[in-house]
Length: 206
Image (cartoon, rainbow, N blue to C red):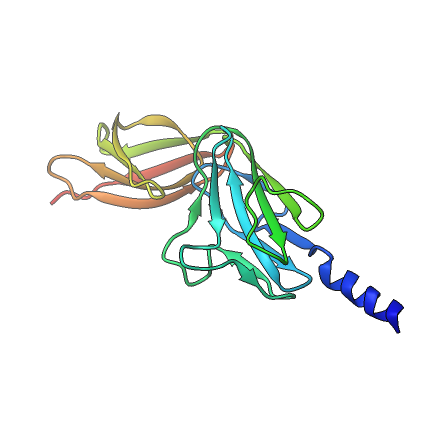
């Protein structure tokens, strides 16, 4: 009887197991891609999740302000939550970023907490600059002005006149072709790494 009680106490005091993963199997991300973090525990406990950026600075992803970090066994937690009003968007320098989950059944642990009652589990994500894409724009009439806006950032720029070959980072773009006396043409273009895309456009006069 005493032996059974001791075994029960040992099981209760054992630290939790944490599984943590991200939304891309190879964990390789390009700038402006969205990152989603998932974690799950095998017993009810406190969990804190931290992001260690390429430069070494740390920020807490979970729990959010006003939460105590207590999580339920078997439930998959998603960061940011599906109903959040924000996303995690990859930015910054190339390198390895580390997501660390720290768990304890006794208290909400800090990143530097250690000991038999605290467990750490991590996943590394690899941030890389993608190989550029090339976009060749040819128009009728010639010498139309080219304006390109990156959808993810909202940054727009004028890139000269047609015909022209432009080297761009992979992503989604809004391309506007303009010429005095002609209707402006607008196209949405998605470019992948190593793409060599040709776009032929014909502007109609007013």
